[in-house]
Image (cartoon, rainbow, N blue to C red):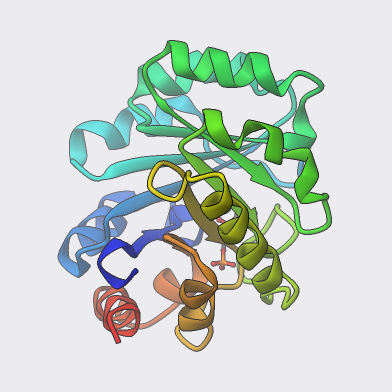
Length: 223
Ligand code: DX5
Ligand code: ZN
């Protein structure tokens, strides 16, 4: 598990006027992925990043760009984010009546596909799609804002998904990513529950030394 653990710092908590510094810190700290939180002020009560920002980030880094769409009508943004250079596009199961068509659309762009689930949405809503996707994004806070506290019940949900993926023999094909309230003090619990990728926003960019904090996360994961 330790060797597979990846950190995805969320630039939501970085300085939007200086995203180059955030990218450099991710490079220097050795973060595997960059998590991009896309909010439309409709699915969630906040407004953030669109495809032009991803397009500007793309030539500045070789890191895997992990786009988390918290938007209604996700199908309208799939191609723009794919063209902008996203490596993986995740949509929310709660944001569409037709998840299958969104999965098919993302796949048609050649981009990896993720499905996200809010903290109180039944896991049975996403289970039918496990064998078609690359990643399950488990929200451990209500989506919309960085800096919230980890919802403790999330750990059991991660364990349940891990168990289900094992039962379905999908453990090598589908990653579990956890997003919200991840800090140095609870990262180990989340990894032990079965997460492969941890998103950390305020825990990285809200600290004095984001580079060292990224390294500290990896040291924890490797213990
Ligand atoms: C919340 C976003 C998260 C957010 C996490 O809706 O999806 O990615 O950046 O921030 P922290 O790590 O501060 O909880
Ligand atoms: Zn996110």
